[in-house]
Structures are given as structure tokens and as C-alpha cells.
Length: 524
Image (cartoon, rainbow, N blue to C red):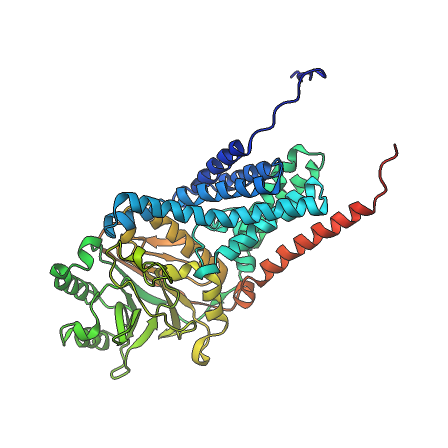
């Protein structure tokens, strides 16, 4: 192969404009959607981040770096959450142009997190006079991950499509029990920074970083952080497949009540679980014998039931809840109230009632439950529910396992009840399933998913889908599940270890800069 000679008299190659770099970054961000479920091409994400970092490193100013980062975040969010349009327009009755504008505005807002991350990284590089390896390996990955973490809790958080979710089946998955999803996102960004250096004189170090990270992650995947506890239990997870346009329609409510009563009483099991709001009426609105009939079936068959139903403590306190029935006569109902609510769907942010009024969404102003709630005891196992959106917040679930309510022992099984019919037959369904897989990797606990239209599934404590119902079908998933005890490092420390490592990376970059400043200038 011949190398082309450069003409020393040729004019310098013009620099690409900031607009051009923004377009490249936006396309790279949109491309990252293929790294997540249902596609699962996780190397695409590392490549996309490498493109972002390259464009930021080549940007002439801090402001241009921030704009490039914003474009990447916009493309990432718009491509990955376009299915929100289905929820807002088809099921929320919002006018199509307004629904499309709302999805675009969400992408605009999420882009600001990446803008701050990349603008901050560019500012630090210039202020500290960092060499390329320090910027690529220390500053850019740390800033990317830190602002992903901030996105996960600021303004109640929107951690959907956090970078780490793409790696539940990559070699980096072994780090999940230690660092959680944000730590995996940091490691993916670190691999992206190293990828850039493969054409730099530090290519040997860069290649070593990638090989060591991937190899160690693969090795960690064989570590068993938790252990079997108690005897397995039999479960039945119900998928009613109620069309969203019928779910809250009064003409279909009695049909739904009959459907779920028949599905629940079709066969016994140690645990029978329905989807979120399988019953859309408050208990006091139900036929007087409805819940007692179900309770009698539990007592007769030795089964336990988790039933999705709204509850009201007063005229102004409504909850998205599940109640639990046990075989014990007179034991009363177990209760779990959803505490991490969906903005605009379950609570109205200050100043945005006008926006919610543009939609037709029931249960739109709900009260938040307690942050730490007790698990539901079923034979030797303790089942900790979470409702739909709540399983995006891994640190909250880890906190409930690390510090159980009412002096209980930690839960041994996780249960997610969801109604994703709001999003139709879109990639939101497999994306949410992937999120649940990450929760099992972080905690070492199996996750049971009972959903209205999918994905109803059993996921073991190592993130593997053991059984799954076909989406958009009516059916029951029957299985036997072993609960797990013990604690992963993530359960004990949450995101603290990841934050410490990211802060250490930034401190290391500062030290690197100071060492460079001490070097004498080259001789003239």
C-alpha cells in the first residue's frame, strides 16, 4: 500500500464547521438506538461515543463543544424515545403536531445534559492544558457518565436509555453488581475514548485499556454475589392484553373484571400476579363480592395474589398500587404504593397543567407512596414489588434491599407490574425488559414481570430471560422461581463506588496536568 505524499505548498485543509460537527454528532447519537433492545448491537454505542468525543476534541471552542454535545443528546433521545408520540397522540388524544413537538422538546431538554458534559470536558481540557490521552481516557468518559447520573435524578430523573443498559449482554455486564448501570456507561465511554487513541502514539496503552476492561468484565460475570435462599415457589404471571383504548372505557370495565377473575382463579400457584392497574376501579367501586371472592380462592387453594389496583385514602389522595392477598384467613391485605411517579402521566409538574390538559389520560394526579415499603412474604420468599417506571431507578431498589422496611430481612425476589399498552407495539417494550434485566444484574435477584401487553417474563438473578410470553397476546406464564439472598456491592453502596471512580478520574487528569506543567520547555 502506498501512502499519499502531502504537498507542502498546498493550502491547509479547511476545518469542518460547528454545524457540520453537530450534524455528525446528531447522526451518531441517533445511531446508538441500535445498541439497545431489541437490536442489542452494543459495539455501536461505543462507536457512537467515539464519534462524539472525536468531534468534541476537534471543536475550536468550549461553546462549540457544548453545541456538539447537545446535538448528540438530541439525536440519542429522539431516536430512542420516538415511541412517546404513540402514547401522547394515539392514546392521549393529543393533536399530532403538538405530540411530535413534545417528543422533540424532550430531546432538546435531554440534549442539555450532554451539552454540559461535553462543554465542561472541553473547558477542563483547555484550562488544565491536558494532553489527548488524559482528555480521552479520564475527562470525557467521567463527564459523560456524571451527567448521565445527574439526568437520572434531577427533576425526578429520566434515566431511560442510559448508556449502561446497552451492555447487559456485553463483556462489561460483569461490572453491574459493582458499579450499576451508570458505572457501565462510564466504562463504555472509557472504551470509546481508548478507541480514539488506537491511531495515536499511545495505541498500545489504549488497546490494553480495552482488553483489560472487557476481559475483567467477562471474568467478573462468573462471580456469584448472591445465593439461593429458601425453597422455590410456583408463580403465574397474567397478561390480559387489554387494548389501551378499552382499558379505562366504562363499557368494557365489567368485561375486564370478569376476565381477570377467571384468569386468577384458573389455577393455583404460590404467587399469582396481575399487571399494573389490572383493575381500574377503586375497591369501594367494585361489586361488593369481587375482592372477597378472590380472597376466598386464595384461602381455598393456598395461593397468594398480587393485584394491580388504584387506591384512595381520601378525596385528594389517590395511589397507583398493588394489594396482596394471602392464604391466611383474616390476615388483611398487603399494600404497596408506587412512589416514583411519571411526570405528566402520574403527577403534574408545577406550571404544566396546561400541557396535561391537552391530553386525555386517566389517573393523572397521583399521590406518591413511601420510599421504603415492606416486601410481600410468600412461603420462604419475600417479594418486593415495583410498578412500571420505578424499575428505572436501580439505586432506589438497591436501597430497599439494603435497608428493608419494618426490620424485615431483604427481599429475595423482585416483581415489576406494568401496563405498557400506552406505547403500542414499539421498541419501548423490549427496552423496558432490558431495564429489568439490568436490575437483576445489579442486585443478583430474579425479576418477575407481569404486564398487560408485554413483556411478561421471568428473569433470573444473572440477567437472563428464562421464560417470556409473546407480546400482544393474552396468556399466563407459569414457572418455578428460586429466590436469592445476600448482597451485591451495588446493593450495599449504590452509585457511591461509581461516583468515587469518576471523581478519581477527574482528579487523575488534574494531577496529569500538573506533572506536565512541571516539565521544562523543549530546548530552542
